[in-house]
Picture 1 (cartoon, rainbow, N blue to C red):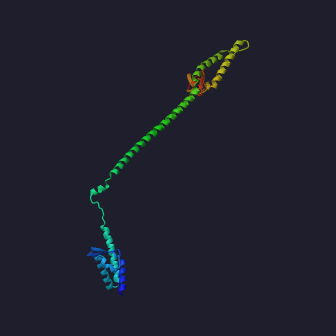
Picture 2 (cartoon, one colour):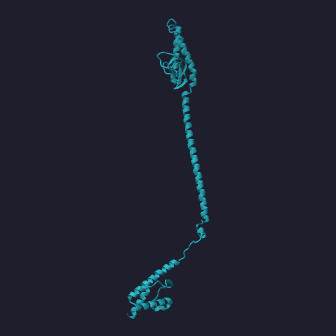
Picture 3 (cartoon, one colour):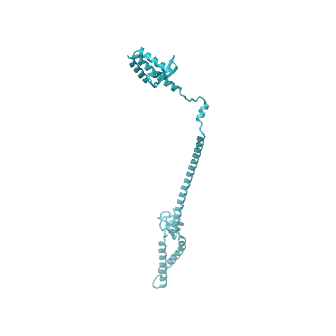
Length: 280
């Protein structure tokens, strides 16, 4: 190998070793390190550090004294040294450890803003819970008020309808006595006396009968109906028993005598019929 080839080889080797770090180890302990960073051709070696120049001189001696396999092994050692140096720097990086309870409490202790936010959140939660209970209470009261108003509306509607139907109940009761008197008057006239020989009595009877019929038609028009339970079963809602008597071949509690007819207004009894029934 000529001198020019040797110089060119050294320069290429220096370029390969740029930005590499060599660590010196003795008995598994790091005793020193240096960084190889050539910036100029080999002719300007005097501007480098003394450590770098010594390293390059050693590399030249190794290159000339050993074969290519030894140079490759040396390069592997340099790479290994660089990796060891990287691990050493990593382990030497400042790491903060909390070894006491005081440091741990200091880290976990919240700041003033966090304390204020926590207090505000708790207050908002309490206020939200109170508002929720208030809304539930008001909603329950509102539903109860709606139900009560609906019940009142239904009762008032029924009362209005009943007033329309039974508003004349008192007036009808007063007219019942008139109807009874007309009935007694027409029944008291003997049938044999009603003839052309006695025209005055005949005309009076016909007038009373027509008045009674007209009154009954008015009662029927307004929903007032007669209750004449002859030969019917006794009904305590429409009948009022005055006496009992024994009658052959008749079922017990059967109406056999009607002393006074009754009246009902739209299925409501305003006067029960006075009757006599058979014994059981």
